[in-house]
Image (tube, rainbow, N blue to C red; front, side, top):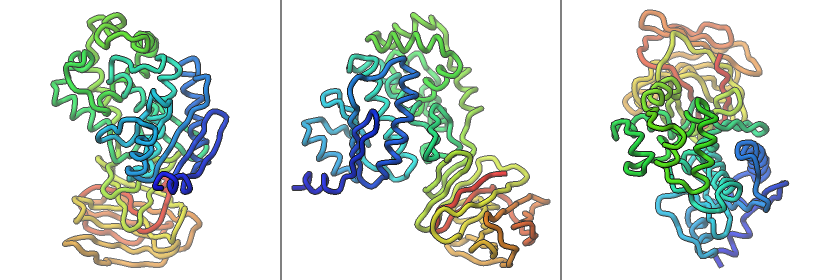
Length: 382
């Protein structure tokens, strides 16, 4: 009965290469993105699976688990998705953020394509390679038309560069132990190693990939291609250089094309890890009523201020402290289709300009950031 009801709730779509069933996400959008992925994976592997590819996205973990039981498949502990070599299907369920749901969809679809195109539908002996490659294609920028994979997004909740550096630090940057399988390799550090190799050593990586896909052990495949080379130090430098500039405080943020988009039912916030002397952004309302702006003086989730548009022609300065909100200033400004805010540090104060009109200077020490309140807004950072 439960499975029958789930099937009624699902939306189905067929693309040139995929049979897709989804709940709670846009099937057409997911199908377009998967077709873009298929083209990129075909280029990467040099071939594509002969069969049509089946992907199922469920609205809840319970629905996902029920589907796996229906198909007599294991339910992986702590996972949000699973590619089954037995059914040749990719299964996953909707995650807390739009970005992570798409990342997981790309991740599982990459496993599916990889196994069917390159490994004979068998597990390679090096999990860091299998998972790292799926995360490489999962880390993406999708604007609804163009898919970019193999990128380091400006903002994600998971923050793989930071987590990879932390996890590798805990094992003393012992990549040899990770490659041999003697030390753990979680997804962030697996992603980091694969991303680094693809972009910095593409030909050796292709040889390594072919060896691993043919069943070689991680240590043996690495040694046959890289010998005794240790890439720990260059990888550490690469991670430092490619740190995410933004940190999410309250969820609902993603990079889409050339904008950073925020969407939240109440308040969403993302802040720069290292603020410069100024921050300027153009705001494009995508849904709801405009109530969004730029954060300044951020020191904690309970200590910051916002220069916030309420509609396209009214700006207010709001202070968050002690668990409450206080309006410091409010002003009408000339309206624009896409309102613009500019923050500039000046001797322990921040000057706020909105649509070319100065709002005032306010005492503030701390970081700059972005804010949305019960709406969806794209920020074009200037």
